Image 1 (cartoon, helix red, strand yellow):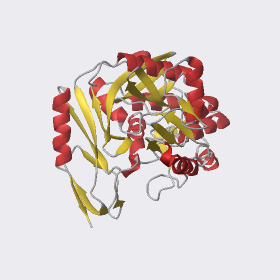
Image 2 (cartoon, helix red, strand yellow):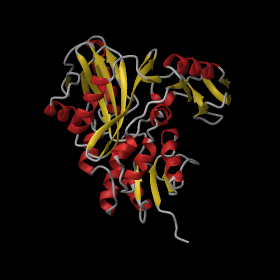
Image 3 (cartoon, helix red, strand yellow):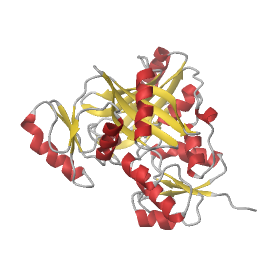
Image 4 (cartoon, helix red, strand yellow):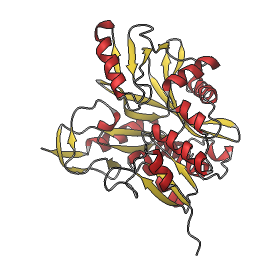
Length: 368
């Protein structure tokens, strides 16, 4: 009996589960690289180039769904081993370096916030590490009074020690999830991205359909993807709907890390996780497979646990929890502080929001 092809998955956390499930549904064997005890199949960090290269020997492909830096690792290892991959190492480097992104977007004339590596282009401003995700080491400043501290924090959190400073653009934020197939960037869904109060940039919920006309955000996102040279595979773009039109926050050459592919599949029928797995092993994905056929509304609602040490979490079937007993919760500051999520669908946006709120309200965390 012929052994099933192996897909190496970088990361075994919640952001990777949809892709892992999609791979199994396609008859693939998965080999998960994760240094967290009990999470992966091999105790190798998803950011360990040499360890991933050794694990991938004889594999059919690699995928890094849901997190940024491993996208670079997957592309480089695939190139080293002669394996298929939707993007090459140069494209992956740009997709995982926000300064390189800013330069590429400027060169292509794609609208984005004013930015600098020298100092604030304006106030208020956003100070961030250019090679991190999930709001790590990010600060929003109203004036210059906290600049030195914010810059030091961003530099300490940055892999390269560099700091990126952007003008703060007011306005609602949306997420554009899509896929490039047959040489064309196709938008699968645009969703509202609503933040936790007091935790800028950390999504509390994703809602489909969005409140506002998504056409301009979708068009700008596709332009951004093309400017970065992403010519195949999945992508995820955060866009602010500013006073002067859409502005690109960031682009990633991967599935969204907030269970976006689950929401997209529920509401539009596009299985981005399946398409991403196929691209990772060199199988073709047609434009028709990633063209949406909207069928209702949906919400991803993230869960916030009370501060303390987790004893037990329980809730309805729609609820998924991230942590085992013993995990210590504090206030939500970055994306990984969230405790889990619920996915709810409905005939209309209001219906889906109500269902998600009811499911979240039924969740119970016992902490000490």
